[in-house]
Amino acid sequence: MELSPKVEFLGLSFDVPVMIGTVFTAIVVLLLTVLATRNPKMRPGGLQNLVEMLLDFVRGILNISFDSKTAEKYLGFALTLFLFIFIANQLGVMLMVTTEVHHPIPSLGITGDDLEESHAAVWFKSPTADLNVTVVMAVAISLFAHFMGIFRDAKGYFSHYMQPNPLMFPIHLVDEIAKPTTHALRLWANIFAGEVLITIMITYGNPLTTGAPLLVWLGYSLFVGTIQAYVFTVLASVYIAQKTVQDH
Amino acid sequence: MELSLGTMLFQLVTFIILMLLVSKFALRPMLGVLKQRQDYIDKQISTAEENRKEAEKMAEKQKEALNEARREAKEILERAKAQKDREAEEIIKEARERAERMLQDAKSEIASEKEKALKELRDEVGHLTVLLASKVMEKELDSKDQSKLVDRYLERVGELQ
Image (cartoon, rainbow over all chains, first blue to last red; front, side, top):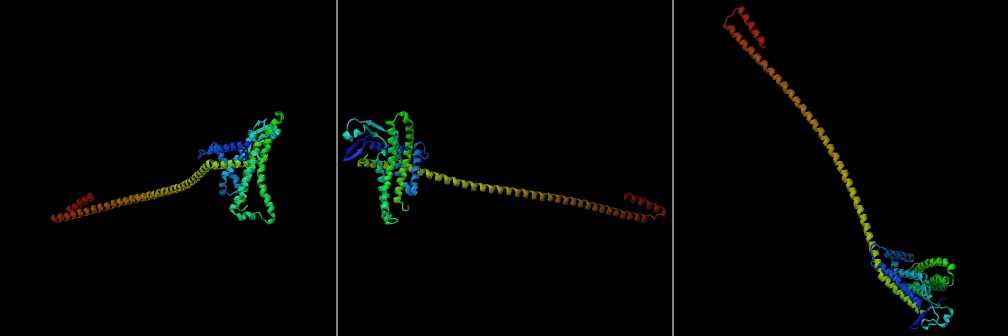
């Protein structure tokens, strides 16, 4: 496994490739959406068409679990989430930057022990292939959903845990914990596994034997990245809707 | 791979900032233009519908007007035909009356002329008789001369007749 450079700041540790990837993805998403809508026209063309299509697509996702009026409120969230994860997923497939490290670099969190394991330090990869990213996204969405549920109807929110009888409380608890966990792990595992396989095929394989499978796998990874972005967005909207919409 | 709070916070903050920026600078103008387009399409469709209704009404009106015109033309034609018939009849009747009158006039003229001739004749005969009588009285004529005289007068009457 490659090494991941880290920096310490205010007593917290920051993962450098994740920061680079996240900022890069955010800039791409922002450029794409802002350029497409910088001069919106009544007759769409080019990039505007693409973003309008995406908007319709995201609206379709939200309409699965919300009524159309509530769906409009979450449009910005869902559009950003889908685009962010979609582009983040493709980053590692398109481009991965690693460097050779021969000496320990304490300022980047690379110690002698780490060098025993590997000499490759990764600088650029999919942020969604890092567990931190998917966990924080899933947990934030889950917490948001719970807070919204309490804020909207506290009595209904808590009584839900006792339905159909108090004996079900532990099962509800497991359910609520399992939701963000699976939400995070599903995305992370799919993208991480894709990148691991790409790395293995490039570094350990002979191009004659792994060249063709690599091409197939790259194509498949693009597909998986798209599907996982869709799934993550759908689940996010479903989890929020479960807590905020009365009859579910 | 261990979880680190710093990376998580960085990711969360980046995402939230991105979400706010996208919502403010991309989504809002996009939704605005979508709304505008929706309104425009709505307006266009309702205008088109109105226009179609108007056109239908107009066509109906025109059809009615055409029917009206056709009916009027027929009426006029019929009236003209009736008038023509009436006039022809009148002319014939007048002609016939005139002919009758002329015939009547001719007949009455003939009758009056005949009457006049007869009256003249009678007057003449009377006159002659008086003349004859005076002549007889004037001259005492012998019977031979008298018969000769009567014959002569009778001859003259025959010529006159």
